[in-house]
Amino acid sequence: MNRPLSILKTETVVPGKQVASRENTRKVLNMLESVTQEGGSARRAAVDGYRVGAKTGTAKVAVAGGYGDEYIGYTAGIAPLSDPRIAMVVVINEPQGDKYYGGQVAAPVFSDVMKSALQILNIAPDAQQPLLQIAKTDNQS
Image 1 (cartoon, one colour):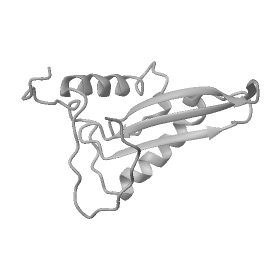
Image 2 (image 1 turned 135 degrees about the horizontal axis):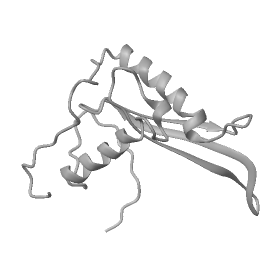
Image 3 (image 1 turned 180 degrees about the vertical axis):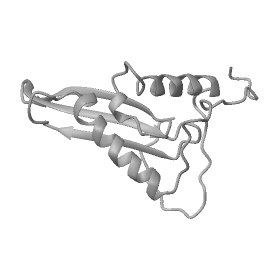
Image 4 (image 1 turned 90 degrees about the vertical axis):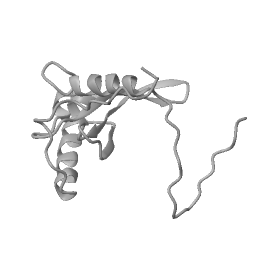
């Protein structure tokens, strides 16, 4: 049964429902981390000392009747991967100059803001810890 979106103010924790297996979640986190490393499209989103997972993207801006000549570049990601605490999306609307890909214009901003947020929240670096290992205690693997 489909229900319309509802936004409720509550002081209690609302129970969630796991919709992806732990194994598939681990695989996605591994992929997101790999693109922040050497050779990846999101390597400029990396944060020294932290394990970060990210995805970059670029799109032409829609205009009446099609697409214009302007772009949107974005980088979305999470950190630290050993115990994710922050999710962030950086969107650069109509970047100027020859650089307009998300990995060129949004990833460096993502890195700077994520680094500051991790420090402000006093989240310990995790770069030396192994990738999020989720135990196979459920029957979803």
